[in-house]
Length: 271
Image (cartoon, rainbow, N blue to C red; front, side, top):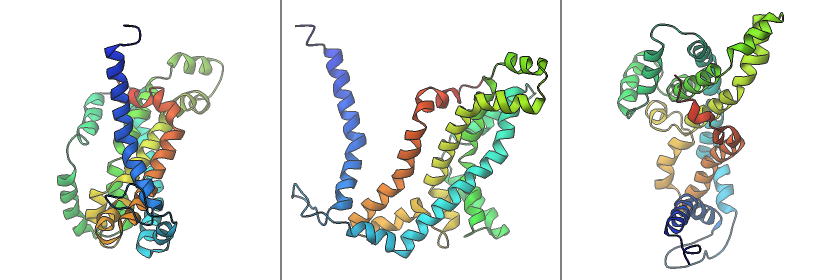
């Protein structure tokens, strides 16, 4: 009897079922509303299925503009973050220097508290620099949320590359650039790819700062959600929410191998 009735296993299975329900339940609810012509309580089923709400999203100029802005700004933010942070990540991962640990803790601590106060202070600076309501201002705001990913995770990836392999390649006559390209960068690439994915998602989903410095001139998909839930039918909001979640699902699915392999966790364990 004990073989078939294990309280610990039953509790674990119940926890898994609840987790799946709370994770997939909202997504299923959104998916049904996105295709339902009408579905209201106490009806158990939608009155019909339609693609009207999808066409309304893509034909609405405000919503289409928000999607375009998100797809433009997020890749630019990631590229800028790579240019700024990867050299710093390499230095932190491969070079022992005074203040290294303080530098990394400072980056981490800057992202450990609510940012609305920081955004308000930045908005004051933006007014003096005429950056309010500009793409440059939005890109800078979104860039702030990517620094921790693009620095910590690649730094740990660079630090994990065995120095003995680099020294062996140098002894064989390879130049410093060849060693970096063929050994250091190649072995650190999984961690860098994880950092790129996490940075893109951080930029793509950033809402508070983007709304504060971008509205009413520039709206992205997350900031458009503020007005969407109030001014559009619930089915339109459901479609837009699914589109907003789509990049996260696709990118996390592509990077699942490295994330599940510990690259993300290892990135926050730099010693």
